[in-house]
Image (tube, rainbow, N blue to C red; front, side, top):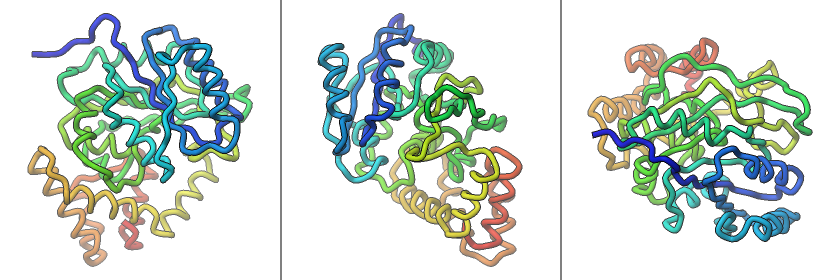
Length: 313
């Protein structure tokens, strides 16, 4: 039996805010201009000290409280804020779209994503993610696009790489039910965690090469464009500082405690990766090929070998 998309599914847009007054109105306006009308916005504010809440309340007054719900965030970090919002039992819709406070959605963002999701078996966990279009801080100049990934999504990729930003992601209730099984998981980021759980639970991850989001590049961007020499240098420095090793440690230790229905091959991969990354250099290098773990591009996959050599994996 295959569950198909109903005629007018209801969408929950899940947005987390913190001191986002500068660009928030443009993002809210882009929701209002969506060609698909059946959506509700849920905003979890993490203690903004600027005019963010005032802006949200003005849009709530205009749209109505049934269209825009304003919630209090946990005030821990952005990962915790998003995960708490995703797991909120009072939010129940057909699909969930994650949103940052400073992007701009193209008018067909929701309708395009739903068209892609309609091709999947929605009885199983489903995760949609996509490329983004980088724009200047005033959103008037296109700076480029995120990389195209050609290799298939899989757990062997998810264990070492998140393939798309959370600001592009949409998912169904089957995946949300998986997320709800775990109370306060220690993870590097909520979007990476969604990709990991979707692959672990035999879900379908759909990576879309078409962008429907303008990803604003500015000084307060939590994460910037992942292209160009400066971006690659920054990530190389993170590798040297052991940041990626800490990410791996965090995820592997969390995964080893999970009681999730997954394949024996995935469980074996988790345990072998956890152990072999601390063996001698020859075993660390052969581990990448033997376990079949991979990143999406040649340079980032080579970085896996460099990390193994430097004991930073």
